[in-house]
Image (cartoon, rainbow, N blue to C red; front, side, top):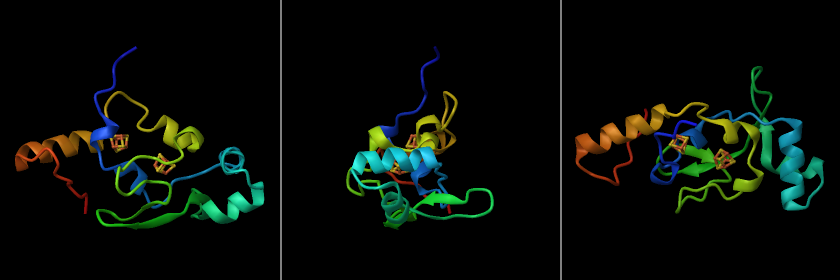
Length: 122
Ligand code: SF4
Ligand code: SF4
């Protein structure tokens, strides 16, 4: 199996800043189990309405780098706080051995000559 050419631990979590991170009924069941709450409560507390393409999406919180980001991201460590219970989409992204965001980040850090640089996409 090919090795991934990205390191999420060095990344400020671009993928978690998507406005619409889709969740399924099964994802909500997993969240409900993780937080030991009913499915309905998990749906209300953690999920909001999205759009036609993604009717149910993760709620966001304010973020200094990307305006808003998934509410489950730890803003200090930039790590997922529900890693074991994260939705399916978070488990599969970026679906290949390279992550475009990570390549972008590494390029910008090299240009800036700063290993901590957080490049924004807008
Ligand atoms: S944007 Fe790419 S490198 Fe960054 S956390 Fe997401 S998958 Fe990992
Ligand atoms: S659930 Fe975790 S991995 Fe998925 S978007 Fe939120 S913080 Fe990122």
